[in-house]
Every structure is written in structure tokens, then in C-alpha cells.
Amino acid sequence: MPPLAEVALVFLRLGVTAFGGPAAHVAMMEAEVVQRRKWMTRERFLDLFGAANLIPGPSSSELAVFIGWERAGALGLVVAGVCFVLPAALITAALAEAYVRYQSVPRVMGVLYGIKPVVIAIVVSALVALAPKALKSSPRLVAIALLAAIASFFRADAIFVLAGAGVLALATRSFESRAYSFVPLPLLFATFAKVGALVFGSGYVLLAFLRDELVVRHAWIDERTLIDAVAVGQVTPGPVFTTATFIGYVLRGGPGAAVATIGIFLPGFVMVALVRRYISKIRESPNASAFFDGVNVASLALMGVVALDLGRSAIVDLATCATAIVAFALVVRLRVNATWLVAGGALVGLLHGRT
Image 1 (tube, helix red, strand yellow):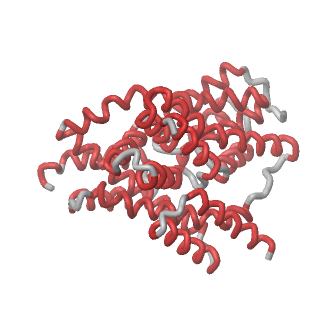
Image 2: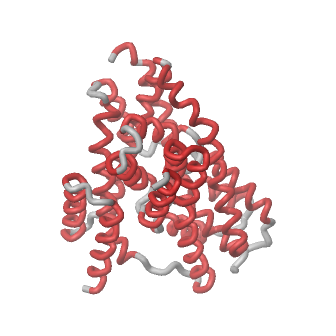
Image 3: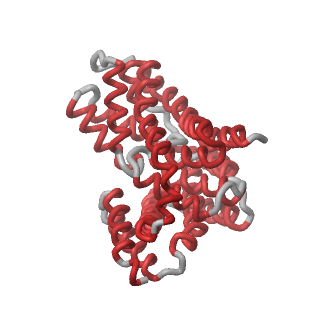
């Protein structure tokens, strides 16, 4: 199969099945492109992941774009990003239509009951696989990872955790139709492009940025609609940034959804294209490489804290605990594809809802 077709197939499937937010997306990508398809080494994957965390925009989508370029060149960059984002955007737009029509979001908690513990297992399995390469058996990097995890646990801003870990690693290197108003489409595009260019790390910090722009500054939507939009972005597969699709649809229907989606994701594509060529050069510099080591271990530490937070809400009884354990065993021991695990978790949730 041509590399471009492979990229399209992998990221279309991830766009449909990658529930659980950026940490889960990264874990599923690692399973696909490192473990299953051997497109790159774990070291290279970690460097791309670290770079995605250092530039503004949706980190998991930018990681997809990085991988697409690595596998299939400049066209692969576009194909990977579009295939990862488009399914989530279409699903979110459908939920937005239901929201506009019925003033509520369809209930999906039954399915999520089974999917959430599977996501936790996938994230933990990725941490188990990536941690040895990132930590390099270095007590110094282990200590930095622990400090990053503690800072994240106490809600320190992700970009400061990443930058701080990089600086610390460098410094210690020598030691070991409802509408509120008529919103012009160009202004809608500019607003979401601004958010996409300024939000660092992941969709977990998106709410504050959107509130400042959409509720406080422009008064286009109210608090309730914003919370509903972010909730939809969280529970649908693919990037959390498809929250923009929901809001765009609520404000201006289909054209608004398209404009908002393109606006918020486009800066990430551009930044990846600009940054990618420098990653290998960064590794050639001892100082820059040390900084990157700190960023990589901090990125994994943030994933671990996210997994812990998700686990508290996902593993709530014996059934979800058993689902998480079985999923973890399947992905670690048998290398079962994450798509089948998510489908199995959804089936568990549906069956649980009927009992």
C-alpha cells in the first residue's frame, strides 16, 4: 500500500475511534505507528511528541501532522491532519444539529461507561512502552519527570511544566440555527485561528481561552453553551478542539462549523510545517538535546497525571475495573489493536445500560 494511503487509513480510523482526549490519542498513535507498523523508533516518536507540546495548538492533532509528514512527505502532513480531524468534526456537527434542534446533547454515557476504562488501559500501556526510552535509565530525568507530574497534579499550567522541565534538564545536564447574533464568517475564522495559534499543550486548557473570546469579549454565546460545546468535544472521538465545530455550527450553521474548524486547526498545520525540519538539528546540539529530554519526560508525566484524573472518573465499579484490566492485558500482551478495544468497551457500556 502506498505510504499516503497508509497514512489516510490509519488516521481516519483514529479519527473515529480515538476517544479520551490528547493522552489517549498519543497512546493510540504510538501503538499504531511505533509498535504495529514500525514507521519510526520510539525515540523519534518522543521527539515529535515533545515538539507538538512545545508549539501552540492542539498537540495530538499536531502530532498526527508530524507523523504524516514523516511517513509521506508534505502531502502526508495534510492528509494525516485532515483524516484525523474530519471524522470528529462531522460527528460533532451532527451533535450540534441535535443541540440546536432540541436544546440538549444526546445522551452517550452508556457507551462511554465501557470506553473510558479501555482508554485508561491504552494510555497506561503507552506510558509503559515510552517511559524507558524517555527516561534513559537516568535518575536525573526520573526526578524531572516526578517533579513535572507533581506540578501537573497540582494544576500547574502545562506549558510552564514543559518549559520548566526542559530548562531544568538543560541546567542539570552536567550532572546526570439558534444564533445569538449575526457573526461574520471572516471574524469567526479570525477568532478561532487566534485561539488555535495561542493555546499550548492540548484541549484541556481550551475552555479558558474560548470563554475569554466568545463569552466575555464577543458575547456570542453564554456559559452554558460553552460548557456543552466543550463536553461534546471531550466525549466524541478525535481532537478536543472540535469544540470549535460545535460552536461554529451553533452560531452560523454548516458554514460556521466549517470556518471555525479550519480556523482553529490551520495554525497547527502551519507551525508543524515550519518546525519539523529543525527537530533533527536540535538533537545534534548537546544543549538543545538536553532541553528536549526534559520536555519529553515532562510530556509523559503530564500523560500520567491525565490518566490518573481520567481513571478516577472512569473506573467507578467492579465492571469498569475489570474492563480496564482486561484491556490493559490485551494491549500489552497480545498487541490487540486499539480500535477493537474501543469497540469492545462500547459494547460493554451498551450491555451495562440494558441491565
